[in-house]
Length: 394
Image 1 (cartoon, rainbow, N blue to C red):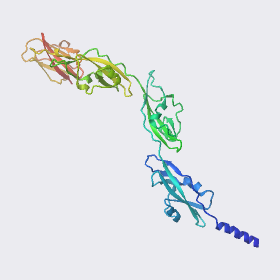
Image 2 (image 1 turned 90 degrees about the horizontal axis):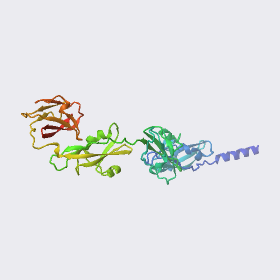
Image 3 (image 1 turned 60 degrees about the vertical axis):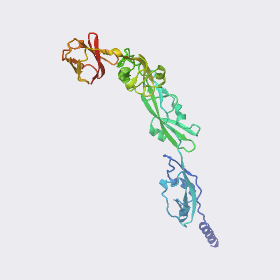
Image 4 (image 1 turned 30 degrees about the vertical axis):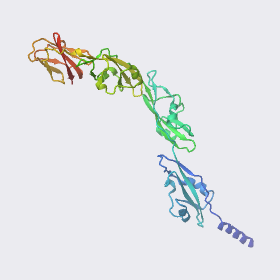
């Protein structure tokens, strides 16, 4: 009986003197999704380390050691947001359920920067066979996206959600064939190998086609030189529809030299009001896609003082309205001489004459309905005298 009593006494003494321990845990780290130094932590991830193998204990978390010692102001462990940016220590309290004994330890919270990245320039390849597909080396933009001296790795994905979850990365990153045309977005995941934090950047790849050779403008672009000095003002933009033809989505710019057109330098700033520097003068037009593929064409501009003869006997002939719709009305105002009416394009082409319509009477009409809207010259000739006036077709 004495032996049994002693055993019970020893056993009870060991239980009463048992120590509660709060083991120091590893820091909890999480990625800073918006680079503000704050993030949400699941503090329970440190529970196993802090408690160790102890039983009959409970763990609570507190923002200060004083709160942990007092067992007050308990934190919600599953979604705690740090209050100090980037680094903060919270405290875990391990308490024996039966005796109330406790121990306290610190838990470091660390908010980790995401890899610093930049959106790269597109990768553009010329379509060599017209099928809209080419083989891309996706890796050539890595140095633009991030500092490759960092301990980072690049992964490439066709879908954003795959990049976010690191699923289905592209295997052939240096010989990738696009699946969408003419352009496709690839998602580049840049991951820090030390922290596991990652950033995602879109990478645009595109298959481009060289613009068709622009139409060769065989006729000079002629403008009336009112004062005979060989200098006139040209609206070069009027030539754009003829230069591009049926192609769409092209940018057209104008240059004074072929070298400038090739290099896209020293372009004409105001093509709608360009003043020539020689007469005649060769100009260059550059047609370019949004990705930079281009073609060139040239044309001649000419300021002609002979579009009109000053000493005319036909000044009294007037026409209206101007701008005009489908018809022009003429009034000779007493002029009895026969005269011929011609309508000339800005390139110097005769696009309509009196012979193309019924005879123009003393107060007749000229049908111009077949003309495209734009600016023309209307030339009235009587014998060796002529006058040229500007006509706008609505």
